[in-house]
Image (spheres, rainbow, N blue to C red):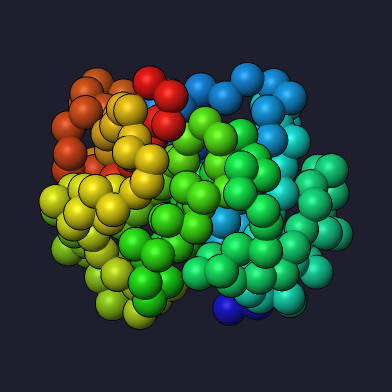
Length: 212
């Protein structure tokens, strides 16, 4: 899949709905004030980086795929794009207020190390959007299409990653979205009625707060 094809999916009916639900949950778990600095790890074509930038954040997007970054730059948004690995971030300690990774750690071989790197370069908190093993999306999509090679995680596993962070987090907020991931009219009616704390959505999201 080319970067242009990947980005085009977000402009389909289902892709637009999925991204909206994901972004709404991430923002709900950790609101970020305009003017704060944010690292988007595994930014790809910059879709979520642009959403955060539109909300007033100063965003840096990092990805190992130079082709994706070159394409992202053509889409504007005032974002600084950097090529690099999430396992060894090219930034000093406490470089950003926040860091976010939206379904990018599922393609990282050592997600615990990547999380430690995100924690190292942030002052206030980290937000993760992960593929949830305990979801209908897993049953429908695991090992298929764009999900080929992706890792599907669960809350117990991620809490082990979080347990290795220093300094220790002060607060952990958990939620999920995409309970009926097809995105049809039934899903769009039912989804808002399901409490976001129900841990069965296709996106398992966590906000890890450094300051409480």
